[in-house]
Length: 240
Image (tube, rainbow, N blue to C red; front, side):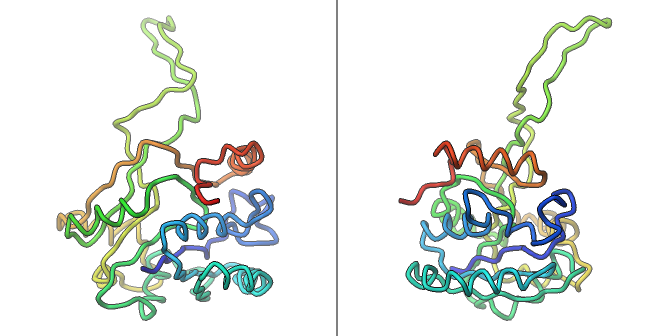
């Protein structure tokens, strides 16, 4: 099975790092975060990767040339595609659709997110449901404490509230190639009309994941992931 990775955005909210490199090339523990993602999927025997590059996409080409012996030893097959600087996510997926097998499902994720979901179970769930698309549903990490207020008096302070009913798109998908027909052009945003249409057709199912998940949108979140790695507490580090 192939993994498509969205890796073409500018990553403006992490501009301290992305002035010189695309966000998926930001280092965590001395390795680009995209390497962590690929290593994670490789653990579950997903070793064919299509990187949808755009912004400074030559960084990917240069990096994977340098570590070619390592990736060959891991059995990785990597296809780096320039899908355009301003192309939206759905457009990027449409641009690489010719590289996908007609009769085989594929995985899709973003080049800036990590989690510890069991990919084998996710794929098995998708095949059992027999729908066009499976999305990983996660509960967002609490960024701020919550206050329960009655008549101006704080009744309760919760430093780290968790709302287990607040599910969001975790960015890890398993898809049928048939989803390509919902993509119009470069301006198509995968998370908008295509996913919404697939959901309306009752062809989108959710795999709930209540364990670790993190997206690296800011410098603070980068430092958080770096800290986990240095302390050898990174939940996504499941390989030996």
